[in-house]
Length: 338
Length: 286
Image 1 (tube, rainbow over the protein chains, first blue to last red):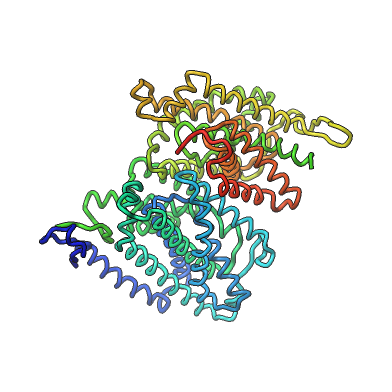
Image 2 (cartoon, helix red, strand yellow; image 1 turned 30 degrees about the vertical axis):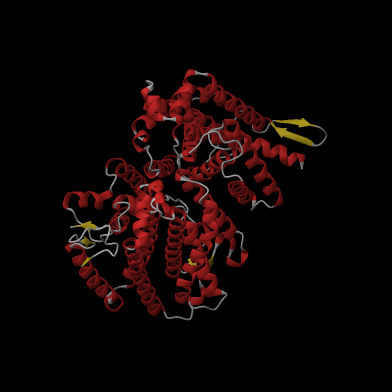
């Protein structure tokens, strides 16, 4: 697919602007086949596979949104678990007290997370760089301690999602699985389309140089705010989905800094600032988790060391390395002039 | 009320020691050390381990470990953290965050999750009686005095010595400082070495005053960070005052409801951020 930019005075005649590659067409086709095949899993798969998928899907969506925030928006946060946990609690409250079907409550909870992100950003944006990172962590702690003091949702020890009690287990697991699959596809599509849009181009310009972007007429603060809200929406979506699958929520689990730690790990290993990064990172994380998580603290030490080594020696992550070597681009967000 | 404020000031002394190393590293190289709290805990466990080998007074243990702490900080900065500095905050954040996870789990593996403390030779139970029905612990007073002395010493080092001049020079403009013959990487390593000596002192005093366990680090980091930001970046007396504000606030919160003390401290931090984002006494820009 080649398209000619409407701003034809910028692009001389006869020059084509390409936003797609042959690999990206193949990736799209393979992706559609994979998703269609995966959607049939409840018909033939085991329920433990579905549970595993739902869990890794939540990690992946969360990492995808962290990548959007940090890799594209340049806002490195250690506090995205605030929106993850908030999404989970809103879903639970809607289900347990509001009588809303928890599956319906998932997107509503994500919207609620996006809504609360607006006032939160007003505080968080007062800090930059590394200070922003720890500042957002403090904000997530405020969320955790606040929910830990609400007795209606079980205080510090948490509570169970009772709203799903009437639903048969097989149905519940299948629907949760399909929801997770839909959320994964939606998250990839959302980020991909956003980055290919005009706003996405503005975002890439801001990442590369904020001052230069501002001087080109890009409303830097507005774009950053939009990214922060979208990332909170995604984190809330992941959180709501996770606790529908988990059926039990507690402040320590919902607002754990480990969510951000694992997201950072996945994105950095896979390659920050590219859509393929969190996908590759999530697959590696899933494999490591499957084979080594029995080693407990040794496993976590290994993850920490791996993140350090990759950050210092492979700044672009594994996918970035592959891209440089072989020129692979599955999700092209840049424009190529021919 | 007066008692709460005095308790808060004494608690603030401890937070000041948590924060000074962070403040120094912020000030000299804009480095956000997310493993600050975990290094404090590591220092505490180092002292506990050494104390179990040689039965000496905690003060002597600290003096024995100070060169080790300096060495660890120096080598870490020189060979790991210097490679992460730059315009992009991500590498240093990821590396220190990775270090935090490594330290927490290594301590868990070696010392188990049990909380431990350092025998303070009776110091933690001694108290001074002031007035009719009011007493303050000797150890908190010692901690407060150490914090005061450390702040003054750091301020003196920064403003009155050749080393402090080089700290300020690389902080203001690294390239110009290097043109003038300074080796910025060396200066950074020295700053982190000094920061790690402060981290060790903070860890030892924390372990004497209460207990430490491998998972304590993140909370200590947040307290340190809040003190630095409330006080204003790059100013050590600012950090001292920030720590006092945090200590008093938490103490008042604890007095109202034990479940809300830390929460209250966080809220006051966020309120300062809203009203005065540059902190109370800012020195460093950017």
